[in-house]
View 1 (cartoon, rainbow, N blue to C red):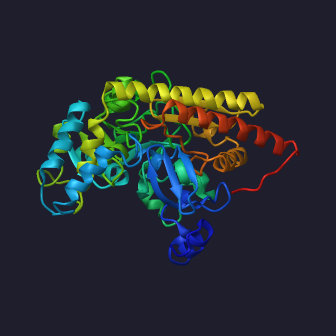
View 2 (cartoon, rainbow, N blue to C red):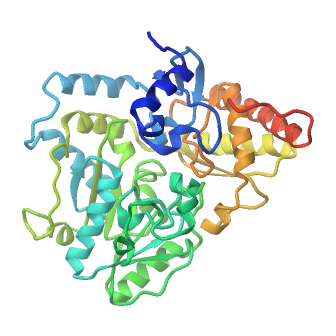
View 3 (cartoon, rainbow, N blue to C red):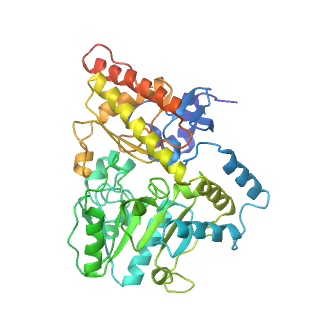
Length: 436
């Protein structure tokens, strides 16, 4: 293969792709060094174009929950591809996937398929405005709902790494008018609403500023405050949906939203999203109602095949396993940090592990932004040198899945102990390993 090295491929990519990547955080700008280019993957592992093997905790940022190249999902996609890849017409599988979502998430009486999590959230916002006749939306600082203009303000994930992250609207190219009807509130604090608010959109578990869990009463308080003024409550479950539990975060915490947004897991690794909610709200969508939303590739036959196969693997036993493995991984990482004398905190929910480089658990975006990004970058590269791939950004979470068996988690914890010692030694002047 020509240019079969990471450095050569990145140089080649930079000539034809802005920054050499198709999603900003992949560029390694915040951690330094050159990104590795994945050639193949299987289970908990990926291999780059140079043949280097990594234990992968990125897992396509949560889109992969059963492991890379899971045979049941690969077989389902292969079979679907043999029948054609896109029709622009209804199919059986999109009905089956909508039924599967509705069965697992009682608040989703009806479901509309889209092609990404961003499409799901932007469509849900439009629907909320159309159904209520109101225009103002409330979001929370540090919650990331995709790159739709009105939702980029004070976002987490890769936006948190931009200098513009402390300002509204949060990105160049987004006019002030686009966020004029967006109110930003601190996470874990119930805002006081009025009758101009169409909806409150929230990550029920914040997973784009590290992992910040909802405080006691926060989600229930949002439900009550929305009810008080007639606003809609929208849960962005693109990360938590079908990962933290069979019914998502809303099932785990017992709070029922009006609308819910999904992605990642329901595509089994392919590009798909969905939003759903009460039937009376969803019926405002065209062709039944006046709120227009459309997509040629919505309900794509390959993505729905993959999604159905992925969901079929996620039974109660799978969620018990996801919980156990995330808990053990978080404990192993915490022991590594404590043993090295590196100030860091871990947290866990099924399929999610958060890393925070500081002396306390964050409760909101202000706290989360206080993480030691330099320490994360040093730890990231220490892990990468030892064959463990984390997300190249301090505000992402780790995604242990069904393929991360006990031996894999033990090896990750061992690597973390060595990497943490290396970070501490470098800071004391004993050694300063270069990035990458």
